[in-house]
Length: 260
Ligand SMILES: O=C(O)[C@H](O)[C@@H](O)[C@H](O)[C@H](O)COP(=O)(O)O
Image 1 (cartoon, rainbow, N blue to C red):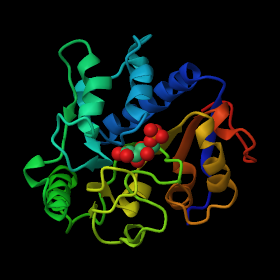
Image 2 (image 1 turned 180 degrees about the vertical axis):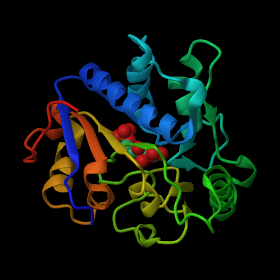
Image 3 (image 1 turned 45 degrees about the horizontal axis):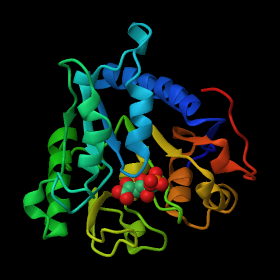
């Protein structure tokens, strides 16, 4: 268990959230560039890509505030076993909401799943893990890949990535990427980063908005109950930050932070 508590940042509106999220991401970008001259991130699906677009597509106000897209390496925290142009694809969603709207010639390197294996989720997970091994270092030299930043969502049941409450995948300790064939949220076949990979990130950010999240936010922050999001909080502690709107944390008793 990590020693310190996660950070909870609450904002009156999503545009205000997006503006602070931008600053947070650009600080993580600067740290990544300093470490290895690239910025290695993992992203989820859901409402996240839209909020990311709000945060990242606005013009910068100086060198410190520029998104250096050509230094970004984008991996998927979880992905559905569907073609890359399918309406359920997290890649397609990110492309539509963010990648297609980036102006200029400097583009990130994006690592989609290999859809040749979409009928065999174990093979698909193994292939994605091999891709991480090639990018991060061999499994013999590092126990786990270390993302500079993971940008995650929180489901109304407390799931994150495709790690669902009470699912056996929460006990995975060896694999970097796991297959799942019985996701309670459709579609059922997916791959996901394992919990140890998620909690090992340099920074982990959750983005959760809307009143539909307030009950689960209360449970995550006040009880934990072994919910996947709570396990990330416990494993990552102060390396974990939540960016939420007031509606999502209405009635949640947990100290909020006003600024980064
Ligand atoms: O592929 C997926 O299903 C997502 O990665 C999933 O983990 C998502 O992030 C949460 O369900 C939150 O989704 P919302 O932000 O839409 O509530």
